[in-house]
Length: 444
Ligand code: XLS
Ligand code: NI
Ligand code: NI
Image 1: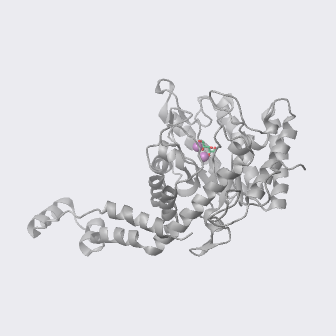
Image 2: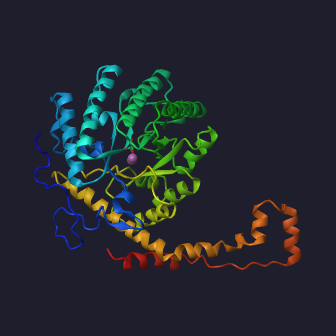
Image 3: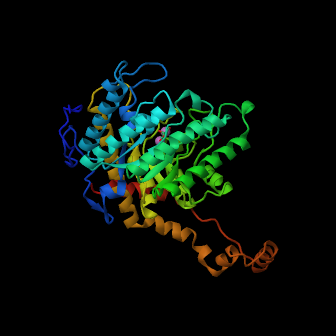
């Protein structure tokens, strides 16, 4: 087997912040113990197959720019898929990350019929199992791409045509089988085209009922095959559709409640999708955790000036520290992890650019983990929050919340007692300074 990343020594090692400008981890030391677990156990990093190996660097205005020989026209599709898989596992191994994620069509070429596509997938998945056994790399999640093929232009589960729903069922059934067979820890459904372009041709209630029916069938099939991983929905507000139904974590939770699916599905939150929805990443993480629906993360960020999914490598320690803080505070990931659903920029042509992108992102997460652990240990933010809500822990607060008093009684009692509450500072600037104090003072 010829090496694709032949200029990169294997594997990329931890070299500390004094490392030169070559390929090395400056903060991420997989075996370093932080807050009771190793960095690798906390972060559970995954590399995505699609942007890194199945995307040629094209955009809406131009052709592919990357050096990905298996994507060239005229190569035999199965041989190309084997070469791509070899390069992908070489990359995972050299990067030293424990997990990867893929869609069916990233790994296996689509055939002329559903049966032929299923066969191709089967061949590639058997080969992936072999590669996983050889390298020790594991599958964080699998997913089916039911949004790229023209048949899905009007949605998969939400399509006006039941035959399209049925074709999506074929792909999802096959990918759930594949994920189960490969020991995947989660199964993701991103509703790329489960939304609308115009309300003029759309029946909202019907499409929601169809989506719920599909998700119910998926949850039943999970039990039928004995898959013990987590089912994850990936919220996104728009792109490619004008409006996507799984808009954000709170919308997903409302949908799960409406269709009796609470406990069956959790969310895979993407930094860039949170910001496209007009939220901070911190907001989406805190909301999902508080709603009990948090599952996993796609760590790629957006560009603050662009209104689309730029899928850039995470590099803001402040942004990621606040999210990791909330995750740690709730006990960390269970089956989830940080997937790099990240894209290189179209001008990043060298093979080692793929390493630089991932290494920088992983180091930023590792640094954020150190800061988050220090924030937790320091405790000043939680102390402040506890104090701010302390009134609700008094008998008076508890009586109100427990339903021990009705509106009129409460009003009458309040008038009689002459209660006159005074505004209290929210201390936002002090809290922001506290975060920076920890960021600046945490050693690497
Ligand atoms: C697209 C999504 C997609 C999912 C997997 O914006 O992020 O890549 O993660 O289908
Ligand atoms: Ni995305
Ligand atoms: Ni994603």
